[in-house]
Every structure is written in C-alpha cells, then in structure tokens.
Length: 51
Image (cartoon, rainbow, N blue to C red; front, side):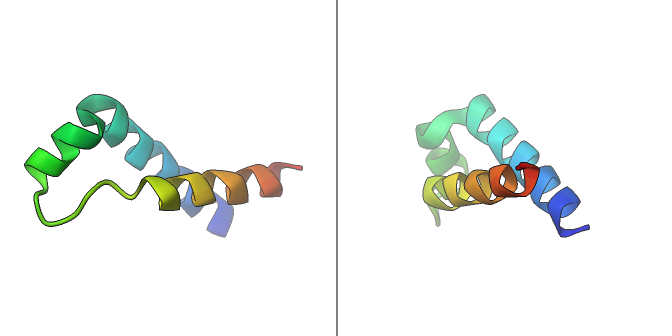
C-alpha cells in the first residue's frame, strides 16, 4: 500500500512539474518552490521497491 501511494504522489507531482516547470510552479504557488529534491528522493525509494 505505501508503494501505491508513493507512485501516485510521484506521478502527480511529476505531471505538475512537466506541465508548469519549476518557474511556472513558482509563479502559480509563490509561497514555495517545487520540491525537486523530494521528488528525486521519492523516485529513488520507488525504484528500490521495484528491485
């Protein structure tokens, strides 16, 4: 179950990044920059589950 949630969060966040980019994200959600490091960590965790 945690893997399914992680995959769903990753897919959605990745889609937002693809759609808006870091700059567009910052313009729309001015309080915070896009969590690129966290997204990379999540991707690494998911890849670890897949092995």
